Length: 155
Image (cartoon, rainbow, N blue to C red; front, side, top):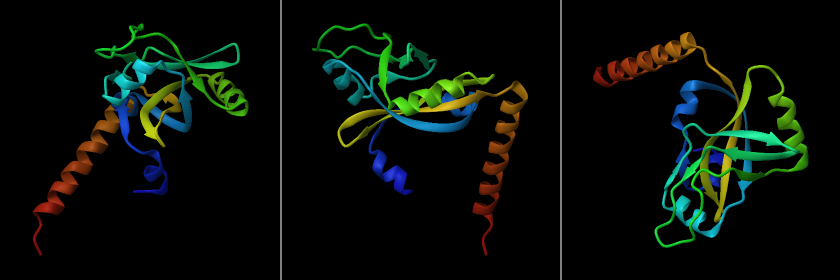
């Protein structure tokens, strides 16, 4: 486990499909503005990142399309409302610049706890073509078969 992994804390939600559909170029850590009952729902793991993305509007960065299920005995809220992300001005300007290059997008990779605060890891990513996805599957299968073969060899 690297130094970065130890400081991250507990991962509450992960966008597994992002690694298959996108080539991750660069990652950033962002805070997120939430209501109290949304925090409780996320800590229970009732959050879905699949199909969500990050957009920039009026010099602010928003998390769009993330589904947070309502907490059973909490304040009622809209499950898929846009949520503002907290980044420094420098990071926002940098992200907006990277978004304007052709073929890149911002996607949430995971939501995790860091010192009792909920953070979102967002990444600048480039969409993979169909042949890139096939290549990824082939590499994964090759690695599995190699591991399986090494496991079966007894010296």
